[in-house]
Image 1 (spheres, rainbow, N blue to C red):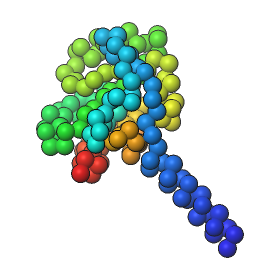
Image 2 (cartoon, rainbow, N blue to C red):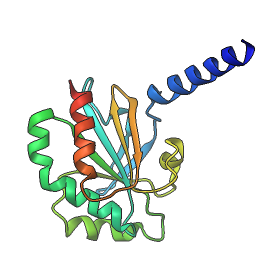
Image 3 (cartoon, rainbow, N blue to C red):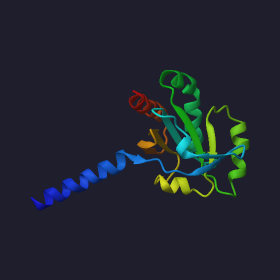
Image 4 (cartoon, rainbow, N blue to C red):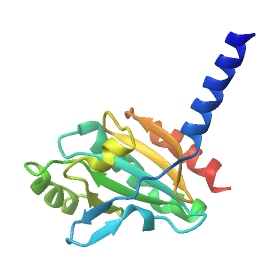
Length: 161
């Protein structure tokens, strides 16, 4: 009985800490040098997708390209917003703006050059995607394989309701 209660307590703790963790508040720099607080990224009841990526990460770029192909239609259907946060460090962050300028991404791009935000959301690898609503992290996923953007969009639709 003692082990059962302990197991139940651990399970409930894990579920509550994962499903409703708050989005950490950090100030990140935009490509034009403006400071943006993560607290102000999503309007109330708006679904926000945060994609952590890097210029040296081919799967990250493939994922953002794949999302871009459907982004306008998906926004029309669910009105979610995507913010792509580069984790390039001070040495490689100079590559972000040229890469983004060569793409047709309609996303807000922010820089996490010290990777403080990445550590705060426990993202060990990139690409790493978070779905946020009312500043609560509802979903977190690492990695990308072709087609997984569709799975991501299904999650977005689920939380947009």
